[in-house]
Amino acid sequence: MELKITCIVQARTNSSRLPGKLLLRLGRKTVFQYLIERLKLSKKIDSLVIATTKNKLDNEICKISKSNKITVFRGSERNVLNRFYHCAKKDESSVIIRVTADCPLIDIKYVETLIEVFKKNNYDYLNNTDINYLPDGFHCEIFSFDALEKSYKQAKSKFDKQHVTSYIWKNPDKFKIKVYRGKKIKNFTKKLRLTLDYYQDF
Image 1 (cartoon, helix red, strand yellow):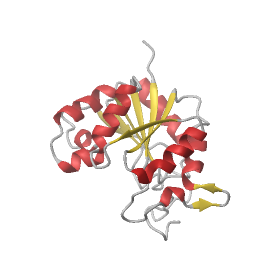
Image 2 (cartoon, helix red, strand yellow):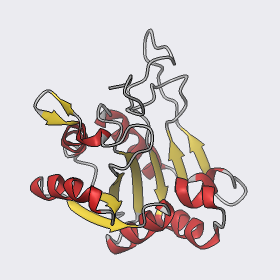
Image 3 (cartoon, one colour):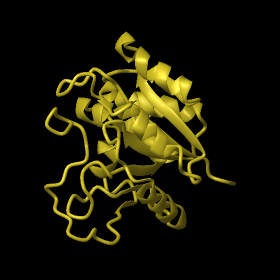
Image 4 (cartoon, one colour):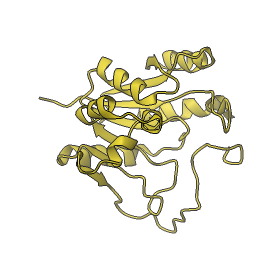
């Protein structure tokens, strides 16, 4: 059976460190628009879904998404694991790519490399989040729907419910986990940040 690969973008405007960061403008476009335009370039992603909250502050995220013909799922603001699980279930996903919306410069080539590695191996979870190889802002995670469902049913802590994949990487005895490093970028320094957490990053 062919796998359905869904990229779920975790997005909300009510950030405690930099409120409204996704709607900040870089030139003529918002940070959020740059991200979704990059992800739409992929021919290996079958479905792109924005998983945001039911908070009315996120209505603008929904508006931008729908104007770009992107599906929106609205769920719990604090229990992000719950939001991801029900989003993936509704989309009938086999494999989920998790991208956070504060990474507007994500390189789709790295995302597609992870997709290929995941498909060729029998992993439950794969990421490229080693900051010694790629800058923060290029990172993403891929995991099976089965791994997500197991996490959803077994995770009990507030931390695990807020961080989606923490239950997986905290339990290597229950999941087949891999960190993909690939070829190190020339002249790379882990001080380089291409994510948007603070105003200094902007």
